Image 1 (cartoon, one colour):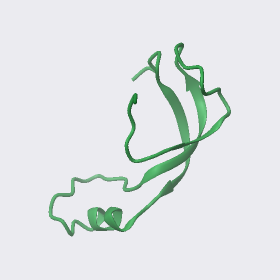
Image 2 (cartoon, helix red, strand yellow):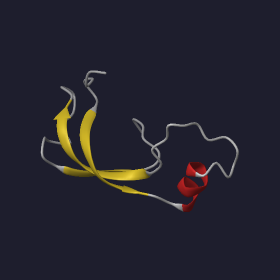
Image 3 (cartoon, rainbow, N blue to C red):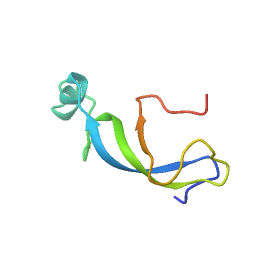
Length: 71
């Protein structure tokens, strides 16, 4: 989708993989859906920011945790 006014679009450079991601990839929990790209808690470079974003600029290196939201 297009970058919205409050969105930060990032190019993912690195991604953490924890034991739960491994279980999901191997379907140990019996609920995996494929294709799958396991991992979360990413580090990336800001590529684009929405018109209402003031905290980040293109070129910034940022981290995104597991839970993402407005507050």
